Figure 1 (tube, rainbow, N blue to C red):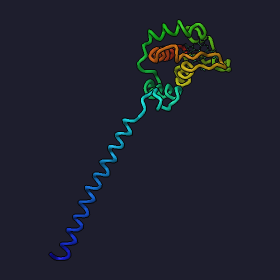
Figure 2 (cartoon, rainbow, N blue to C red; figure 1 turned 120 degrees about the vertical axis):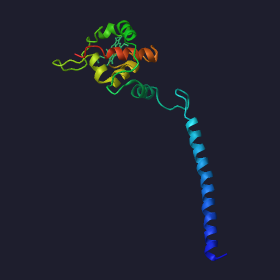
Figure 3 (cartoon, rainbow, N blue to C red; figure 1 turned 180 degrees about the vertical axis):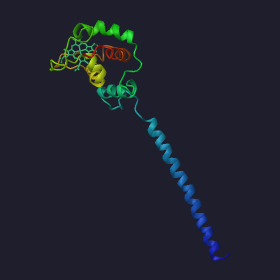
Figure 4 (cartoon, helix red, strand yellow; figure 1 turned 90 degrees about the horizontal axis):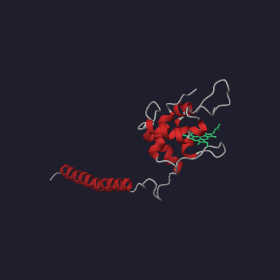
Amino acid sequence: MRVSGKIWMYSAFIVLNAFFLGNTVFANDSTKKIDAVKEKPAPGSKADTLTREDARMAYLIYNLLDENKKIKGADLKRGEELFYTNCGACHGNDGRRFNFTPNQRKATYLGATARNEMPTFWYLMNFGDKKRGMLAYIDEFSLQELVDIAGFAQTLPPD
Ligand code: HEC
């Protein structure tokens, strides 16, 4: 065999080896990745380090808001009933008992917060604000009930 033939054979051998070696390395790598996905902590489990606040807010952003910042999947009739029986006493059935801005010329009511600042609304409804006197509802209602209330609140008059 000529020298150039040998060189060709050796290079082919090296390339093939590299190919198989590479395959095993990458194969291992991808199984590791799959394991990592499997090991993702279950929501609410000990290994899940998201705070309750973060998890609730993430749920709003990823699952509830459509592209117009409207709440998806709310039962408005049930939201209305829940609002009248639980929120109306303080906020008024039209949500206009509290003005949330000190600006007396342009008042903004609960309906405006729900339409324009749903993350604020969602946070305040879930976790309350002791200083301002707003209660936390995360342990009072199911997630779906809170979604219904939030959806209904977006139909309240903003001003
Ligand atoms: C015991 C009375 C009370 C009840 C019941 C109540 N709230 Fe409130 N809420 C308040 C007070 C007081 C504030 C703060 C008012 C202020 O800062 O001027 C507030 C503030 C809020 C805010 C903040 C709005 C903003 O723009 O900052 C949201 C949202 C809210 N309430 C939603 C609700 C919902 C939804 C319910 C029913 C599930 C509810 N509240 C029931 C008293 C109440």
